[in-house]
Length: 120
Ligand SMILES: [Zn+2]
Image (cartoon, rainbow, N blue to C red; front, side, top):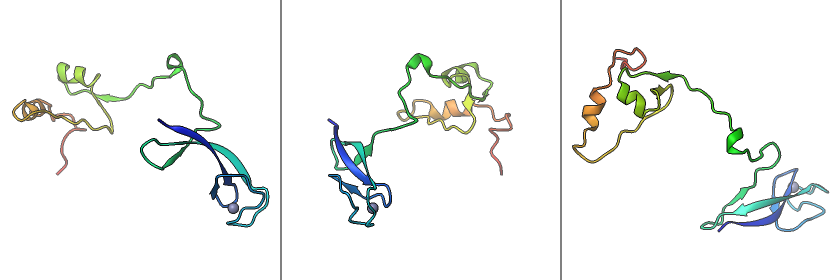
């Protein structure tokens, strides 16, 4: 389980200390310590800064869904399983057991779409 702890960062040089100090031992600046809460990862000693100002939780109902430009594969079934076609710039991984039909399915994707044509 993640454990939150308080650390102090020097705003001048960025060094981290476990307690507040009037003068940063690393850079020698005075009154540059700033308190922050960090969450230590459970399985490692790495620390992750808790999102601060400008990042606030948003309710799911308030999340705005963008509409991606999709490339239709001219196959109703392929378009349906891809959520309406390929999203430009995305990558689709087709996986499965040997012989399940990955190549057969891939060969059904028409290459008449100029976006999907391999360039040689
Ligand atoms: Zn410093």
